[in-house]
View 1: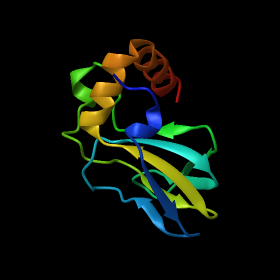
View 2 (view 1 turned 90 degrees about the horizontal axis):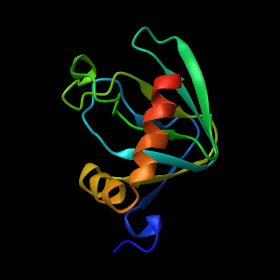
View 3 (view 1 turned 90 degrees about the vertical axis):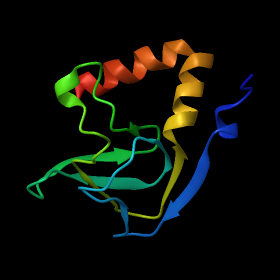
View 4 (view 1 turned 30 degrees about the vertical axis):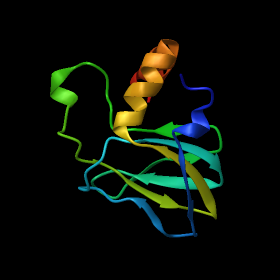
Amino acid sequence: MINSIFELMKIRIYMPNEFIIKCGSYGRGLYLFLDGEALVFGINNELLCILTSGTHFNNHMGDIPEYDFEGKRLLHLIAKSITIVGVIEEDSVKELFEAYPYWMLVITKLNRSL
């Protein structure tokens, strides 16, 4: 039984201008922004948005097969300031969603609204 999300999370600290995620890299972890800001750039290097404390990023785009990119990241995330991120790897994300199924609904709705 999971008593706290922090049991599954690895804390990472990024300095300003440091890549958090590089476009083309692979991964399916869930990134929870605990402090600081990150710039999100698309594949054409256009600024898409800024992620701040309380926001999240993951590669999961819902249950639509054409959005499954085999775990390939399609965005750059770059720290704008000192940024503290909690990362939950894919296997642990599945464990989290099994323990708290309503989180899957919330994250899926958030992803579709972006």
